[in-house]
Length: 509
Image (cartoon, rainbow, N blue to C red):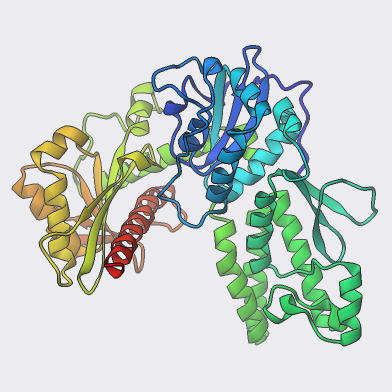
């Protein structure tokens, strides 16, 4: 990706979000920038949890002058809500490094401000960090640079490898540098599962070419095995390398559309085996394209994701008001031109999503996931071990969770949400509504039926609709549906992780 270089590393983009203390950082994926008293960016990093990661650098619960903080060499905090993440493993490794490294101690002593950019996922964080380092050339990224930390992805005509240096070769293209060896491994691991490619040395290639059989990677499907003199294998290898180039250049939407188009053509030609391979690639590719953002768009508009989430909430509110013939948020001027009051309301809009997880009633748990302004707030997540049922009964379990969440003590402690989302259909939603009615709570509530991603809405005012509920299908790419799905998927993951913990604990008894 080509980025116009700035004359120096002074932070001059007022759109970057800024905090005066790390405690103000959100608990989401993103990139952070440390800035000194001269407004110079001195270090760029990334995290799956910005607050946890940056907090590892500092001691002092109440201080807001970051430049006077010291590293806590004993503090090791980890994001317990993220499982099996490469970035989480790297964060724990990085904590050990900064507890020993005098250069990092010097870095922290010079931090005066923290800026950050929130992104969709860890892949975007990896790519954006690399671009910001190339753009600003922060001195402490350079000073900390060594063979363990920085690598390039080198793409040749027939293979993809990693390199610590750029050499002048006619047919080679480089992407990076990517800080930390684990980062580049993560990216290539994901990409290779979707687009298998050759990465072996020329000597290994020649050896297996003489044997006329593929190596282990060829047998397990991670390499098309061009070494076997297979014309088809060579074609697939070059085509997949071309696709990976498109992805790394940021042309993700274009690539996705091309894959879909080619799959349809193959199906029409009755080349079903090839069409099936492409279909599986498209399904796997969805992980890599959780966001269709070109990383460069974050440099142009660092608040891009925040604005998208706010607009999604606004759209969702308007849809609920229209579809229910009711006015849920009557005190807000929803048709205004995004004035400051409305923006503040949407930025603080609290959605609580509820999910139940159990296996035949055993170790049943309920979870509450909180999103504010469309972003998960993991420090406000709650889990409830089900007490009243030991047989499968999601409706009764949902009642118990809602009853405990909205008792007087917890209302005083946690406040009330702007919207409740129930993971489930009419039955789960009906159970939840009964609890709210019994407690005389007037809180907007909807369900999300997972099979077709349908919104389930109570029929309070509709005279023409049949039954007590109606279902509505939103556009699968709509920002409003995405707002609901973010919370639902997090609630499901959160409940499952707690269920597994209880199950493991029981197995050890």
